[in-house]
Image (cartoon, rainbow, N blue to C red; front, side, top):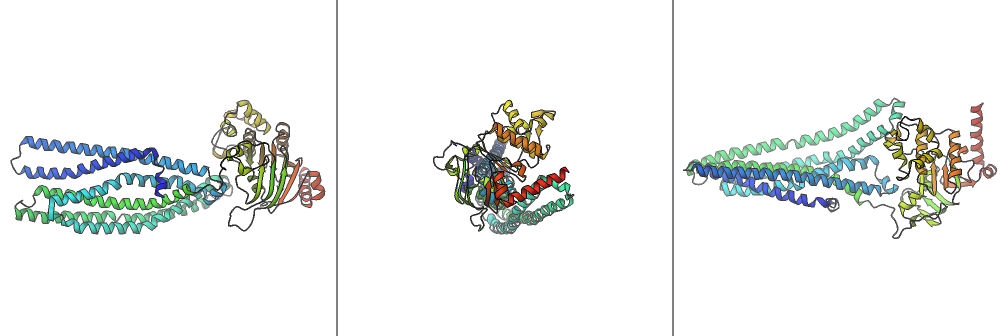
Length: 581
């Protein structure tokens, strides 16, 4: 796991190493300053001339400046290295998610992926900075201070034999006790993000049903759970300070009492005032190092859970990959399903599609009808290889879709969903998702085919009108027409409309289909619809039920042979007649 994460350090290895070197320099100088100061204090009792005093004082100032510079540079460089590492890690995780198939994405909730890309990476970034800075500084400071304390104080350093184990065991106990509370927070972060995401996406529904108070309560509960766990953990971690203070004051009391007695009894021959002052300084450095080590232990232990969650994403192998020498040319828009069965999970017992055999010639218009849950969308998602068939094969242009380069295949297939997504930006920018090099004339032509040009020109800014995130400032029908225009700009060999005209009136729907017939006759068009009027003039109509094709044929043929089709047609026709009357 650590190796996988550290692969994201890349170009920031050099700053990480430089940070370590500067920290070593800072620690060595900080440990030497009390030694020189102690010697200066002892010499002040003798015949110390002003020149020697100034030289020693100047040396201490220079050392302090160098130590400060080393510390400042270490801080700057470690911040640069950790921020760069986080940037690379975030990029690597996002890049991995982009290569996931729907099957991979189904394993992670969107809210969990957001948490991993934000909170978890922030935790790992902090842990990395502590690892290359404080986790280096504290052990070095501890080791050098203990050595210098024994060099300077001799037997007086025995105080540390008592203080260090007590402080070490106490801090370790505090850290281990706090860990379960910190661990439980991450899944609760996922639930909190999920609550926020659902609320923002469904804001109109929430307001439409006057459920603001319910959503506030749900969010408040999730936030309170996180607060409770963090409070519990922080209360335990807060014991660090009093434990540190007890050990610090015990050390000071021991050094001052025993040290003063030794100085008086030996008249400064064993240890002197300078050594005793150095012992106080080294004692403080040792205890601070131990406390910082405990904080590092807490932070890195917290981050281990974040590391595991990030590593899960990086280790997830896409279930769909290109073959070694994939084909990049799609001959035409013909489609064949040969004995296709499909289920979303390998462990699932139920198939979403069963025994589908179907042939569609290039350029045909095919309507797909079926009740809710009949797997209409599932059927068409196998064509651009959003999922792979569990059994059988799906062929486009006479070749199994698994033999194509996925980018080339998906560039040849355009899908327009009922709830398609618009992105924040101008109408032009959204349309150019279909073809980033499209000219303004091509944009207008596509919008005319999609019956979108007329309403776009009614906006004050026209094609430069800004679309809010998710297209919240346009109607459902306008959004669908913009998405159809965007798909047409791809000039696809296969166009799939998944109930994507449900929000437009029947007249506009008819005009859109007329445009398809006249301007893209060679494109294979698959239209999933609830209204028979949307597919009535199709070359072939397929009726799905429980994942199986139960009837297929033209409108006239199905009226004669399919009781289900005839029943739906009569119900919808009668419904329109009633409304018209």
